[in-house]
Image 1: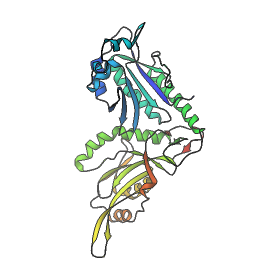
Image 2: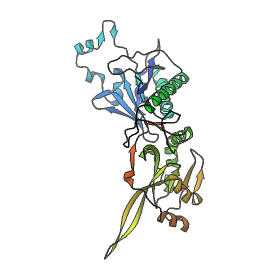
Image 3: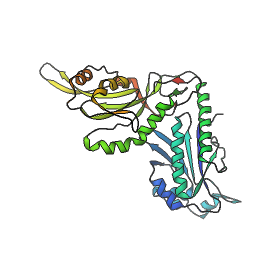
Image 4: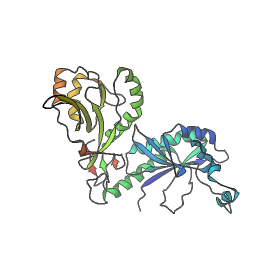
Length: 336
């Protein structure tokens, strides 16, 4: 059976204690969301990059979220039940479980996070093959970041190839075959997400909105999407689609009123309209900064006024699992 996830294990270093307090502090700085039913399991979700993965913590680290291990072990009998004849159950202090059939940068971001935690907790990087429920996974041996990244890439390619052969593509957001983006497009998504906060801090005082990127299920594949409010100064990165919001005047028999109109347009088409009236930047990626939203040039205002919007229902928000940035055989070719 082809695995659906890839594990990065943060292992104890021989002869050196785990720096639990520093490790808890480092965990507290990450966008982690503990599971209510199981405080040892968390979800890492970076809203700017779209990367997410599961994080499993050893019992001594549960206190990072304000809980105490003692609250989950009632008495000495329960503690004894957690140990076998040879001593306490050994598990990696931290395990990152990354979904496969996802852009290559999922592995790179997870490895960056792992590096931060390794440095904080006096740990060592390792990798163990993911086991299905009911199986056991040992800590395995130490690995270099380069070895783990190569293993991740190989596992991701195998899983994508298996998914490509898995059946017919459906019209829903439940994908069978992955969508292929170019490596350049995937890297641009990640670079924009990593740089978005700094760009937002720079442009906020000027009233320029810096949108987050989203993934959208559209025309049978996953596409990149940003948002654009007509009348608001904004950054426009290169995306397949743009969700446009604009105020329109609707006339009645006795009076008229302003209504909000929303729809989808081609990102390339909107780039063509705004490019001449915008500042072009190359960092963190190639993008436009459109500042003249309140008083646009006449030709821009005219083009935006007659811009045809595709129904919003034609695009459904989704996530990036199902996107790969390499050839996976029978995968769907995306526009990114």
